Image 1 (cartoon, one colour):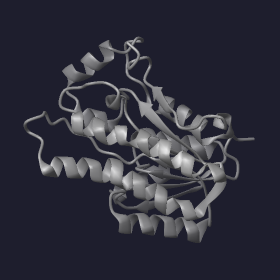
Image 2 (image 1 turned 180 degrees about the horizontal axis):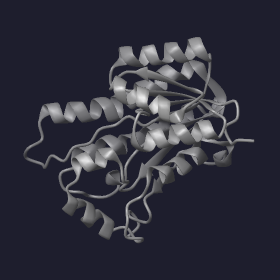
Image 3 (image 1 turned 45 degrees about the horizontal axis):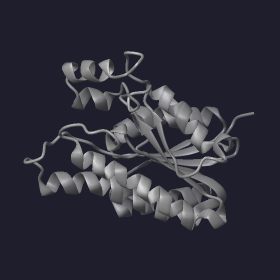
Image 4 (image 1 turned 90 degrees about the vertical axis):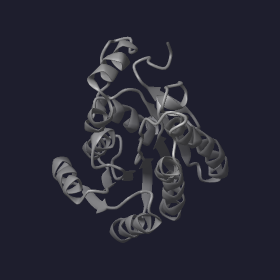
Length: 244
């Protein structure tokens, strides 16, 4: 018997990296999963990798029409949601003095605004007793040069969680934030130089990056009844990176 038997989960940004690993794990634990991604080819590859009990819906989580299409699909195919993992996000290093309106708007439109409306649009389909969690970042509790806008957009999520869990307590819907540390993903390869990777690894007590599957294990915990008494937390899954 799986930890998510008969559950319906929605994962935004689920076509790659940590979210894809989580979608795969959720299905292995008995869930039916809806994933989103902006690139059709990557989305189709993700669906193929997961293999069963999955629907891919192409869309940008920052686009409200795309979110409507996502939840219309969920309503038509399953009619309910038990777990929402709002994972779609973006980040780019831009130092103070070089921050542009476009950089700020792009970052906040997806990381904060997109997350807000994904949760709000999911609520009419949500079962009481369900679980909502969002991908934050240890950057929001550290001070990395160049990442102030990204960090601020991720820090917003804990403020959301505190307010929403209070509003949703009558329905026993939990709201948490999952803070990954440095994780070896394709996206990381695009934004970090080899020297930056070595620097981050030197700050992790075990001396090497986390794996997407390690984030998926934590996501499963937050999605399942194992975390029934966990509400409003920032769960750092970073190998001790943020603790030292």
